[in-house]
Amino acid sequence: MAAISCKVKFAVVLLFALFAISMLESFQVSAVGLGSYPDLLRKYYGPGSAKPEQCGWRCAARCSKTKHRFDFCNAGCMSCCSSCKCVPPGTSGYRWVCPCYDTKKTKKGGPKCP
Image (cartoon, rainbow, N blue to C red; front, top):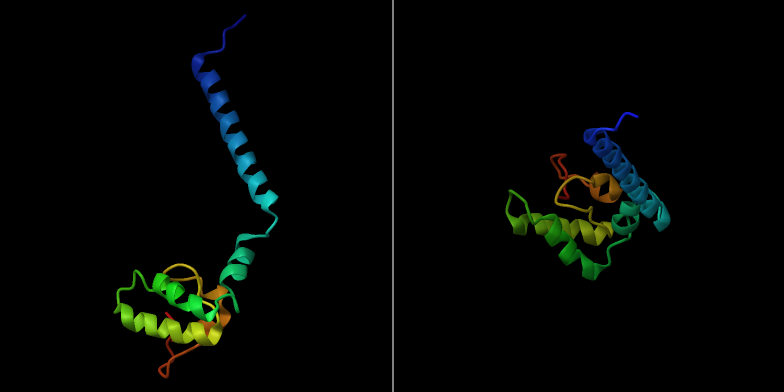
């Protein structure tokens, strides 16, 4: 009988481990039952998700890595949060999560909300 080489055994074990890990992750995500990632973002950051008392810390997080003045960014964000009742997650992007936040424009046509 031909002996299976150590490298082949290692490759088989490695593939099995990767397969098991991927199955475990997909099981955990489906077990939560909350829906897809975009749905979760809309639930926690979408329209109506921010109460007035939450605008401060949400805007501070949104403007935390701004290249512009923090106070200018924070003032714009607070204005948008109070009218839209939402702030997109992260320091940039994800504007589609909060449509009102995304559609507000300045007089020059640029985005009003940071």
